[in-house]
Length: 528
Image (tube, rainbow, N blue to C red):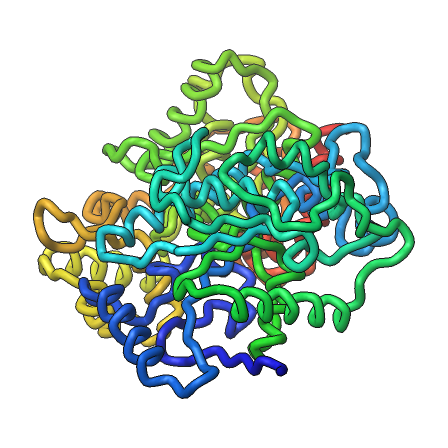
């Protein structure tokens, strides 16, 4: 008998509905629409009622489906671009610099992405989220490792067996949950013996051969073959699984096929599908593409990410921080790259391009510290920040000082300033509940940022005075952006007389819209 599947609306929001390329890695509450403190208990009650009242042959399950964190094959595809990756590089095991086949491991970013999901599980446990009663994973190690990290110290000890029920089902499925199979070496699995030794947390389904006998070097699964395979996976799980709450860790192609089986429009799903706290996904991919060829340090400025919350929040102070970082780590002949906006999941942000320009112009810059300067779509100009930034900051400050207790109340306050729900969701990314105080607050120092808005619209050096940096400078402009224009480009050449201006067919987020071209410009500039 053929099983019919339906995704039930009204419980979880689909973050992929609008194909937003800057989708958060993990949605707050895993996308659960209910924001109340009893949200998960209410969900469990509703699911229980649905199953109790369901007609014979119908069951309701909550399935948490996650894509693995970034692997080295993802990094290579970013580097070479999808057309060249599919045509040539994916058929090889590596390029002499990184190895992606067979069965590549997670990058450092991929590991962090998995820990980001782990953190959300731990946060939501405090609100009663139902833990999965069964875990399923693809046999590819990037997926299994993501599953293990996702539930580390929740269901698994870091190295030992599951912490909870001894009859907890945790199964590696050989055939059904793996990535689109064939041709690409990254999708050839490792041996059964390796998986048993590496992942004692999991059982392996029967029929699992020692070596991968399913991968073919000359045939890549079609979308219809993939959909049929993932339907079989769901059929097996729903026919044999008594658990109501299930976790599946798989791959972008597999998840795309599951969405098709559920009659949900397929979308491009970022690796690690989870929360990204300190930068957009494109920026992370860009940095990892650069690290293939250069030693790279990605610095959280003060009042960003996990760096200290402190005053003053000026470009001179942040530039001094960057120089101090380089000196502390005994770095010399460095290349500094800064985009106009350094995102810290605030909505309000400081300008990384202005920071690196300030560092280059600083009279205390040590000799031989800086070799190359790369500025992405920003000028060394003075001018007030957008009024939107000020309005957002003041609204976020009102949220903190109102001592409210729910995200819904915070959203209502923000609604008075911003009608777009997607922007409100972004601005509330760092909202958290202070359990000791009993009200919500932001993880970032919103009042400190509010007080620094005038400074963030400034630039510390006066073109009327003799401030120059004569070193090699690359300026990358987005052709559709107004941040660099005919009025302020002369300032660039005044402060940086050896600046070379390049442009890409993009807006202000030039590195996000044209990541491959951006990486090529930067790497060629540094190499030459």
